[in-house]
View 1 (cartoon, rainbow, N blue to C red):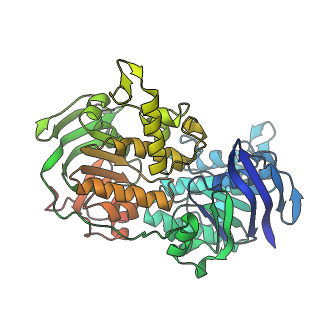
View 2: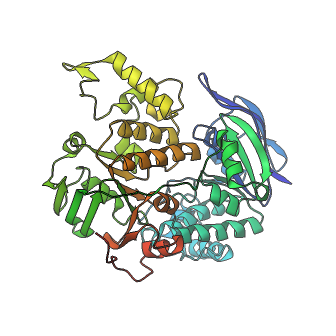
View 3: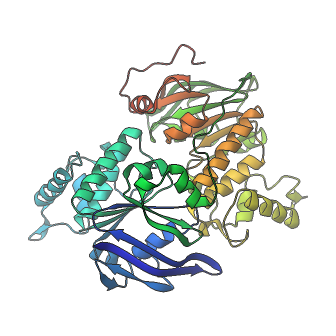
Length: 508
């Protein structure tokens, strides 16, 4: 039996066609991957299913019953749960408190916490989630927190689970653990829909796959076993993509950006400890690590956004310091990990975000007056080159998909041709076509003699692009070596502190 049937779903936003007569079916007890480029309509389709958007036309059937889903509360009552990419948990509360909030069992006038713990632990054991119902969420790993989010949906009776980019911030070991959880859920009869850009993981865990392109369903319900990764990429973007190709630096040049004795504390707690790094011209140094181990702070210190407790910084052999504006003027580019917090002013237009931080340049302003025509031509050129999908460059960035928001940032930074580039999570939420473009452009910049620090939780990305790799754990560089010394699993162990640590003899 089909758990979900969506027929003829159409949704438009103004003149933009988000979905056009889309048919999508999910069987009971299967894992179904929904693929597509940024702006292809994946999130829109799932938001329709979860009641966050209303379709212009079409119908939805849940377990063969025609339904109208007007809001998420109604979707939950129909047994549909959604786990978002950004977790919605309260760290100071326990697992149980996060799971049962809003639906707490009561005994008289009071919450029956003992019963709540017993019920939650029973579910944890049933699905082999391997966490403690009494544990504080702040003590859990990212993968364990994700299981709490899944538990929240299951506790509310979800039989149909929608997972948005579920492996985006997980280590290889955590990804494998998630796959075990998903297969257990499938075995218990749950239906699981995964929105993802990671084709390798789709091939590893999904039973069937459906591909959206520009709001149209290109292929629906294909058996994953019958599709290669290259087949899936071709369906997604309409052309072949080489997902394995890379090229290594032929010769690293002199040191152009050097960090010595970087230490940083927050509220008296060490965040970065004794960090020393050298970025060479014509080389990419990759930083591998689980989020929360100091990556954010490292990027902010090295782009002038945060002041360290102690730091000796050198650019082209000379002492260097200052705020973010000084770094930009000196040719230090920055792609931030959080595009909404650090990368964009979302109420502003695409056009204005593309020149953000550089808007006083002579090509964009003359005697303090905005050069409207030049700015517009610049924005149109970058929107075309970086395939930013929008009605026009005047629309606000808040109206864009996450992937297209990322393209705006990448277009802005790459267009400035920086000498040194601090890049954090450059392809998070970006489709394979844009990922290929960004990767190749990073390699081009490196081959032009630029120095690049790449910070990414995606080990495929780190291993593909980096000439050298350093592992950040607990705010400290625990290992560094050439790109081909460790395999993926060894890197995953280093990232969790689970292997003998130490910087290799050729680290610098």
